[in-house]
Image (cartoon, rainbow, N blue to C red; front, side, top):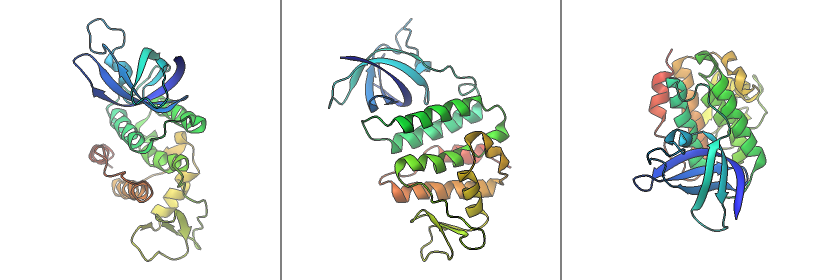
Length: 245
């Protein structure tokens, strides 16, 4: 049966000389694998550009429950990127975001709130025009996306009473924990401030390269502690290179 839905491209794998299998997070069916024929065929309207990471698509596809690979009849852009495909820094961040999503989203069921969060975030990210405005956006994303994964940081920071963030428990504490998985001032305060900003406000936080790198690695450790098999991201080295002082 044919269905219409929107979807966000996470990753593609070459299936044949002209076809691909695309991992797409859909609004109606959650994460799905689609075979898309003729992507690389001459004069095909389904150009590879439509399947770049984070592309938001309008999809007409067949859906059969419990089937590993679905078939797409038609795809077209639901949103036309302004800068994601042309800005070098944004392209690197795009690979990071899509890699995080690919490693965390597993459910083949709808989650309207999560889909809306991602849809709004991608559009916001694309429309932010100044590099300083998205230098901390990957940190903001990791913090706020965690709420949909079930381990959102607790809003209990207090500068003099609870200055340590326990990565294992996901909350701020008065004393440092006995293990090494925690943040202390000033990064614990930065974390709390990012928790209370919108995506288009992250430029309010000024960080050195070292601070940004430390917080990034702490947040990735946070994900590893709470998501089995999350592992090390391939895109990290690129981010550490581009976000210099």
